[in-house]
Image 1 (cartoon, rainbow, N blue to C red):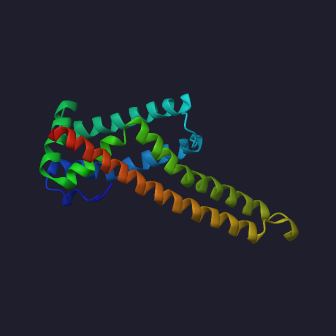
Image 2 (image 1 turned 180 degrees about the vertical axis):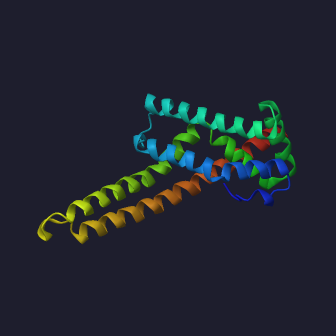
Image 3 (image 1 turned 180 degrees about the horizontal axis):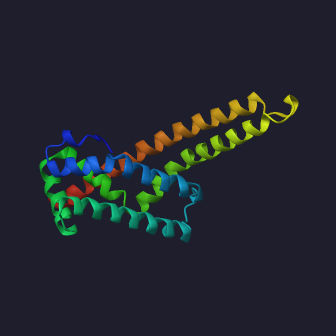
Length: 189
């Protein structure tokens, strides 16, 4: 999303928003959510009804967090949106950040994020399994323990997943920027 230090933004409101979203509480909550559900998302064109159900839960959670932010600053939701619009007019960096943040609540963007998080969730699941296997391996005869070649294959797969995830993240950033630019062109006409 760019710069995660609120002090680096001209508008104090945007700085507060950046710091709120970058907080450990906010980040941990959403990372936990993504990792919990990412494995349910596939790459097929047609979306399952379950995707929308998960999205609704995400959307509700996101809205609740924005309400907390608004309460902290004593803003209504309408005032929040107005402040976002005003900030985007004065600062291109704030415009970029706010557009990406708000677009992340759109369904299509949410599905992309879940697909980006899937390799991370798979890696976490495999690491948990690896820990369990290695604990169990300690109790097995050496001839029956997991082989290093199997583990190096897993590590190679994870490296591939990480590279794919970085590429998907970069594409997501580019899509968000394109959406932001398109919205700006519409507003300018």
